[in-house]
Amino acid sequence: MKKIIIDQKEQIRIDKFLSIYFSDKNITRGLIQKYIKDGSIKVNNKVITKNSYLLKFNDVLNINVDDDFLTKKLTLVPWDNEKIIDIIEETKDFVIINKPIQIIMHPAHGNWDKTLANVLISKFSELDLNLINRPGIVHRLDKDTTGVLIISKNSNFTTNIQKQFQERTIKKTYVAFVEGKVDVLNGTIIAPIGNDPKNFRKMEIDGINSKEATTEFRLIKAYEKYSLVAFFPKTGRTHQIRLHAKFIGHPILNDELYGEVIETKKEFGQYLHAYKISFTTIEGSREEFKANFPEEFYEIEPNIDKLMQKINAKT
Image (cartoon, rainbow, N blue to C red; front, side):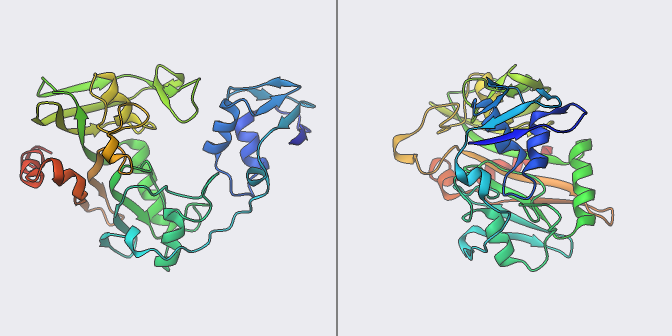
C-alpha cells in the first residue's frame, strides 16, 4: 500500500499523474490503467476505475498493489535467446523480424526479464533507446500473435515511422483462421472499441472510452468448421482484429479471450498472423515485408502460401 497526497494546483488525469510519478520505475501507462480499472486505487477513500478521473489539489491516493509494481527499477536484463529473433531484413535504420508465439513485447508486471525487449538488447548494438522500457519497439503484437514486426535503430526512424502510424499510411495485412464458415467474400467492419469494465485484460465493442475502429476483411478459403480470412486494419486499437472477428460471429480460432480454445492447441494461442506490412523509409522509398507462417498454420492448410498469391495480387 502506498499513500500519495496531490500537491499540484492544476487538475490532472489520474493515469497521467501516476505515469509521471512512477517514471523512474519499470511501469507502463497501460499497466497503470489496468490497475485503475481493476479497482486497486482509491482517491479520498473512494475506488476510482476511470483513467480520465481528474485529480485535484490535496486529493489523497491510496494504491493497493504488490511490491513489484512500486519498487521495480527501470532496468533491462539482456536475454540471449536466438529462437526469438527471426530476422527478415536489417538496414541501418530498422530491423524487420518475424515474432513467434508466447513472447510479450516488453517488461511489465509478472514478467520483467523474458520479453522481446530483453532479447533485442542482447542481439542488437543499435536500438532507439529513447523508447523507455521498450528499446526499438515502435508498435506491438499480442503475446500469441505471430508475424512481422518493425524494430527501430534510431530516433530519426522512430519519429518517421510513428508519424506514419498516426497518419495511417502504413498498410498491414493479417491472416487468421476463424471459427465457422464465413459466407461472404469480403466486407468492412466498423465498430468502436473500448475497455471491458469487467475484465481489464479484455476490450469490448462500445466499451469504456471507446474509439473508432475499422477493419476490412477478405475470405481466402472456407472449410467446414472454420475459415481462412485476411484482415486489413485501418485503425490500430488494442485487440482490434480479434474483437472485430468476434463481432461478425467468427472469433479467431483458439482465442482464449474472445473465442474457444482447442484442447490440443492451448500453448499455441490464437491463429492470428501479422503477414505483411508496408511503409515508407526515411529516404522515401516504399518497402514491403512479409513474415512466414508458423508451422501450425500449415498443419491446417498445407497450401497456404499458394492461397496467399491471390491476396498479394490485390493488395
